[in-house]
Amino acid sequence: SQQGEEDPQALSIQEGENATMNCSYKTSINNLQWYRQNSGRGLVHLILIRSNEREKHSGRLRVTLDTSKKSSSLLITASRAADTASYFCATALYNQGGKLIFGQGTELSVKP
Amino acid sequence: ETGVTQTPRHLVMGMTNKKSLKCEQHLGHNAMYWYKQSAKKPLELMFVYNFKEQTENNSVPSRFSPECPNSSHLFLHLHTLQPEDSALYLCASTLFQDSNTGELFFGEGSRLTVL
Image (cartoon, rainbow over all chains, first blue to last red):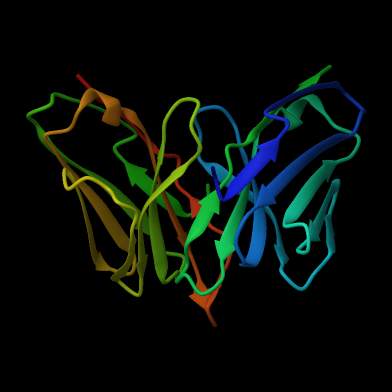
């Protein structure tokens, strides 16, 4: 199976609700990153959390990292219709020369 | 606009054609990547170049041939492709330092269709 696995694969919520996406991985990492992709477009970086950090915030985004469980979560608070997109976690592998491995992603749909 | 430019944005080619995808960044980054994104599949890492040296070739078939002439440009040469190679090909770049991979800046992708 994948280095990064995400759940749920799809999530549908109403505007104003919070959205939580989870990511699990298998091997040691330097950092874990979250990206967003609108349909057919390139990916946009959202937030990076280092292996020695446990939580990070950026605007309406909150990311947690639990290296003992090899898992991370992305919380989007007070969601908006414009947050509709696919969200991916990516792991920067330890001592692997820049290798960044992506999970399969979560498709988020925020209904107005 | 991320500062990473990919051309062409769309490409249709036959199985016997030879074509190239181009990626360019002027962000001062020293690492560049090719990823393949097929429908219903996760992004697949194809190649990584650090300081113009290829550091990763993720078991990619030889019909895909990367070239990195300098730290700002990356090419993906394509020849005798198969229909299953149809996908969105994404280029990205980052600043790799102190053995740490920073955030990746992605281009908009090249949508490839192989007939």
